[in-house]
Amino acid sequence: MKPETLSFFDKVYEVARLIPYGRVTSYGAIAKYLGAARSARMVGYAMNGSGGKDVPAHRVVNRKGLLTGKHHFDGTNLMEQLLESEGIKVIDSQIQDFDVVFWEPSEEL
Image 1 (cartoon, one colour):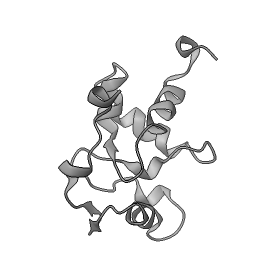
Image 2 (cartoon, rainbow, N blue to C red):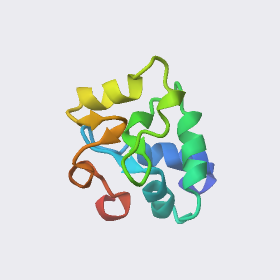
Image 3 (cartoon, helix red, strand yellow):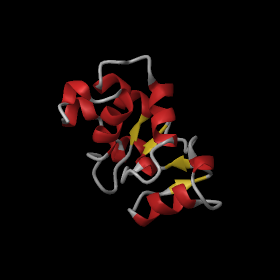
Image 4 (spheres, rainbow, N blue to C red):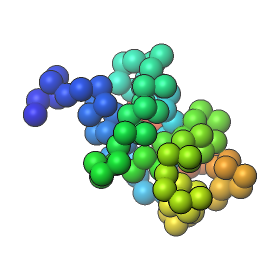
């Protein structure tokens, strides 16, 4: 499929698949990278609908490093557990050292 024919959600999934292991990004950072800076909420909707598409949705959080999408994951703390298994420290649904583990697609891609 040619990139220009991809849906917005598919473009979001492509970016999310590029987030390195042990790093996170934000809904807004993905939206900004895709040229849709005011579409962070749409990125969130895409992450919510990404089940079964091999998308590391657990690596996408809000702009403050909060796990606002955690209720969309199966299990009580699955999002947190997935992040911690990658070496990311989470306390009270807040990523610790967020500035250190943050991955900015506009700078990295």
